[in-house]
Length: 193
Ligand SMILES: CC(C)(COP(=O)(O)OP(=O)(O)OC[C@H]1O[C@@H](n2cnc3c(N)ncnc32)[C@H](O)[C@@H]1OP(=O)(O)O)[C@@H](O)C(=O)NCCC(=O)NCCS
Image 1 (cartoon, rainbow, N blue to C red):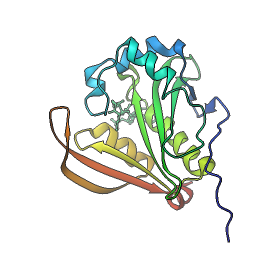
Image 2 (image 1 turned 45 degrees about the vertical axis):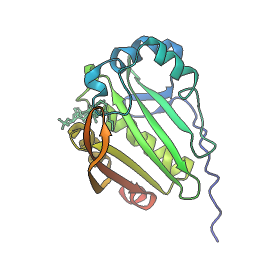
Image 3 (image 1 turned 90 degrees about the horizontal axis):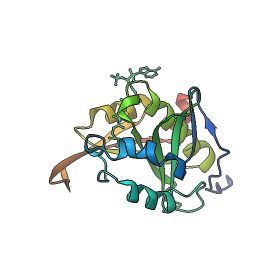
């Protein structure tokens, strides 16, 4: 019988990609986070409302403070900065949903000033690598509002398959939202490497 994976993630920071460094967020990122997370257009299809300085400080001290994943229910949020300049272009998140099902979920937000450069895809691909190769997940999903086409393109570029379209499944920010569910299995990740 195969050894059970330990299902823990302790990345060595920064996690390097071709153009980015992924690393935990700190209080020094407050202004850069505020620049995009306070914008209603950025928050249109994400589960949070535009943030102010206080909310960001609170998140930095709580759910964004984790630097490793040791159990289900935990979330790892990482800032993505340009290796060349040190500018924060966005942030990515990995949810560890279940030990039993070895499942998780990814999310990403990019500052509109830096959109259209492939940074979300590059950062999220690094997150998938951490999820499958280091944490040992079996299945990772991405769930988006159907109208969020740039996000659907990111998931498709990463190689996630669309599995479901949940018509008007959630009352979201004052209207019914249709959710698209995408997924990738560890075997699929290995096959595309
Ligand atoms: C969703 C979101 C991250 C997509 O951002 P994005 O910049 O379009 O996505 P990427 O960073 O992967 O960039 C891809 C684009 O850059 C282009 N690009 C330019 N240079 C590139 C390069 N060197 N490598 C790869 N792509 C490049 C691609 O062609 C693509 O453009 P296209 O979609 O017009 O074909 C962004 O719109 C966002 O943060 N939205 C608000 C938050 C949100 O909704 N998050 C998702 C919640 S589910």
